[in-house]
Structure formats: structure tokens, C-alpha cells
Image 1 (spheres, rainbow, N blue to C red):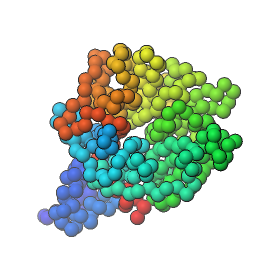
Image 2 (cartoon, helix red, strand yellow; image 1 turned 30 degrees about the vertical axis):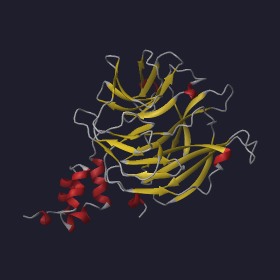
Image 3 (tube, rainbow, N blue to C red; image 1 turned 135 degrees about the vertical axis):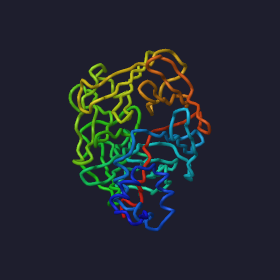
Image 4 (cartoon, rainbow, N blue to C red; image 1 turned 90 degrees about the vertical axis):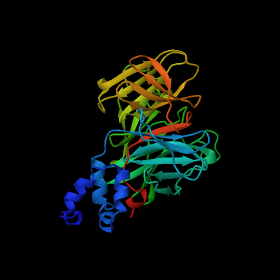
Length: 354
């Protein structure tokens, strides 16, 4: 029996077990395979079999983009052929990465296939010179849609709305290709650092301040299905008045809070079970290394974590031994201005809205 005689369901099952790059090679072998392996049905089937191994994506000081397929001894690094000068990794989901360039343009990229689309500027956006903004990216399972969320607010000395204290929430649907404005956030998002949102469990998370008396800090989660904010419990060991000065990231698929206290140790909190306050666990990075941690970006096994430092260096911290080492991979940059992770997939940003 030839491969073309096999039922489509069996072919999909076989090919969905292959790495994305191998699937790409198979597409070139036969017209039948190319058609089959490009269908939404197959791409979704392949995505459900994805491993938990995360690849690194890094932006260098020269504003180029690199990916590292693994960070073990057989690590492979490659420079991605993405024209432009890149400045920020907003986030990733299902193998799609949202990148921002120096012209504040946003692109949705698959680092494996190198397919990309430019996200159109929002007609609702505030004047950039008079406002501040933060972005987040994630997947809404209820509508099978990837969404970009922008939070924006006027600075205090703007000429347009000097008395406006609202944080506006704009949502872009990748499937529909349109922007819309939803209800303003009930929180104050005028935080010291304009960090991208952390996408976990169907919601994008930002640190904010409550408008209640005392202005306590909160973890504000924007649910992509309902498009409303809810609060997520913070670690019980952080200062409720001041943790808005911390940072939220995704680490190992979990919500993570970085608590840097001056010259003291850096506490890294990880929420092991989403929404459960008792599931926050902490490890601390001790010692004066001459730099501050910007953010952790990737776990290596159960003991090591890759960090981007204030000096734009990449280091690996061993939690069990309390030691640091430089991250050295042939062909990979030793420094980075930003970074994140993604899973290898065949999801096409261009195909979503087709």
C-alpha cells in the first residue's frame, strides 16, 4: 500500500508526530501531502501534540532576532531573517511571537516558518507623544482567535485630556483583522515600568494599583474570552502596597513575579496552580553580582533558569547550587536587550484570518 492510499485520518496522525521542520520537508515531496499538511485540521492536530520544550527567542543590542532551538549541550542557534530593527518581545502563544520594532510597529511572527503579518495600527490609539501604552498577546479558546491587547493612558501633562485618568483597553482580533475598544480598566496602570502583559490560562496579566483607599497593588488579569479584568491573588509574602514595582512574566508556562528589593536578594515567585494563592512558590537569587536582573525568560529542567540582566548579558542560575554561569551556545548572542520563549509549531499568522 502506498502512502497516498492511507486514510486521511491515519496520515494526519502519522505526520502530526513529526517536528515542524520535518513536516515542512514532507510538504515538498508530494502535492497531496502539501495540501493535507497545510489544512487547519492538520495544523491543530499537530499543535495538540506539541512538546513542553520551549525555544528561546532573543533580541540583540544590534536589534536582530535569534532563536535557540534547545539550551542543552546540543543547542542550535540561528539568526532569523526578519528585516527591521527589533526592540521588544511582547509575548508568544502556540508558536506565534509578537515582536515590536523601533518604529513601534507590531508583527506577528512564526520563528520556525518565518511567516509574518504586520498588525495594523489601531485607529483608536492615543497620541504616542501624549500617552503611555503596554501590550499583551494571547489566545481566546472560546472564539478560536488570537488577540492583541493594548492598555493606554494619557500622561499627566498632556494637552488633550489633562484630567483623564482612565486606562483605555483596545483589543485586536487576528482572525477578524479589526480593533475595538472595550470598557476601561478599573485599575490604575500608571506603573514605573511599561512591561508587556503575561499570558497564562486564557488571560493577560499586568501589575496595577487598585483605586480603593490606600491604593493597594493588584495582579490584574484581562480575560480574553469575556474581555474584562479580574484580580488574581498575589503571593502572601510580598508588600501589598509596593509590589506594583515588581514585574510579571511567564516562566515554564506559569505566572511569575520578580521582586527586587534594592541591594537585597531577588525573589522569584512562581504560581504553580493558577489562581491558588497557596501555590505561589519562591526561590531567591543571593549575592552581589554587580548587575540587576531584568527578567527570567526560560527554565532549564528543574534546577536552572536563564536570566537577562541589566547589563544585557545572558546568564544561567542554578537554584539548587546557588551558582551562576554564562549562557554559551555556538552562534548565539552572549547579550540581549529582550527575550522570551516559544514552542515550535506550524501555526501561520497569515492563515488565521483567511
